[in-house]
Length: 433
Image (cartoon, rainbow, N blue to C red; front, top):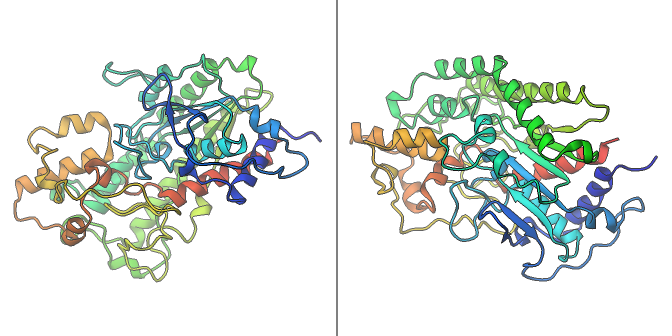
């Protein structure tokens, strides 16, 4: 049976990764047309890469060289928030360790650093399904509008849903309590998220997004074009008992990580994944050949969640946890680029970047978890100056390298998590008929 293009491509890329030819951070981005969003792979590579040998007889160098471009769309899970920056970070919090950037880097290695494949990196922290389709305030293009269809594109990567379904509200009310007593009840936040998950609105918008992408690339003229949609991973090991008395609260006497809470939050994630998968199945049923691929990488995070056996949370030194903690370091294999800058304000409530009297509306408008968290903390401190941070010593020691990201990256995949996401994408691609 003749292997599909995706299978042959995945085989080559998997070999590139396993052979250690290149790491994601070897990819140096050169801006193309739209600053901060579109890049050419190659032509501006630092260092030298050897051409990888042929991995298997059914995969040829043509499978890599024939890739002319791809696009990444979606939210902070797609943007790779917290996984490093090269220079000043942009408002979308795009990270060098994002799984889409790792795939771009693997393509570069497979092409020997010579090809000029385009990579449109449009993923943006805080994005909702609505903002992929249309600009929130009309001041900038939506991701669909910014998608330059005149550039070559062979496949798309998409992650979306968490911001639509109220993930941050649950994190705030149930785990961190950024706004202290004013953060609302955990029960209400969980119910609101369950209600949104159970409604048809999210599925409807996700379906529109996928069809808009297909229409924009004129799928009928590109039969091999596919959209790869990634889900989410459960945050906790919900079987352990020790974590019941531990807390991630930002203020002293924060909420405990009880087993029931961990279980409810995990169920929330699995339900979202099931909803995304169902939407994709509905869309694919309309085509003779599947146009959309769902990537469920959740099991790849087993053993690498919060509250694992024998771990005392919060454990900032545990590199095997594949989610960020507030202010926690990255776990990139070759060292983190998200270095903390000591000359920024160390205590968020006094940061010059936040005015507690005026920060809420723009923070809510942005949808940025970090801006919301920082604003809520500034408001809480303004209302009660006696509030004490639960881990003030840690914050003072590791001053914020960029304040909103310091909080916004929390509960997002670290670099090793994005590697797992990338590897699962390759695994699924290889199984395609």
